[in-house]
Amino acid sequence: MKYVLMIYSNPESWGHPIFLRTAEAAAMTEGERAQMTTQFETLIAEIAASGELVSVEALADPVTARAVRVREGAVVATDGPYVESREQMAGFWIVDVETPERAEEIASRFPDARFAAVEMRPIMGSSGQEM
Image (cartoon, one colour):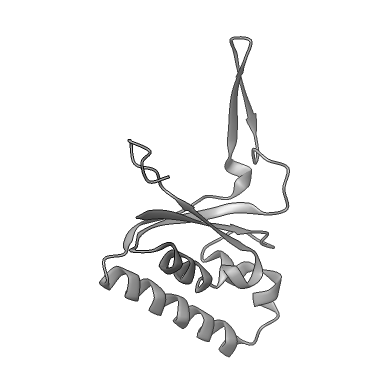
């Protein structure tokens, strides 16, 4: 089953990997940040080698976002993040795994899960039968 793992963060400054731009990471020693990066790179290599990694995309700074709405036939596009929130989506990963537990295990190994959130959602096929 495919899952999208969405990375959310409230960074001090935008950039990727987002987990290195959090206040918590800034408070770590260089060695702790390097260890966290190594653990992340190990995870990426593992799920790529196993065939579980389908796709990954980082998103640009939320200030570059545009929200498009149609109200009473009129198109209204506004600048900035589309939601009022401290945390913003930084990127997403698509994994194809055997069980929900495996998807959760992968999500828990993202450094971002230590500081913010990694949201996990099943991806429905066109038939919707997965749900």
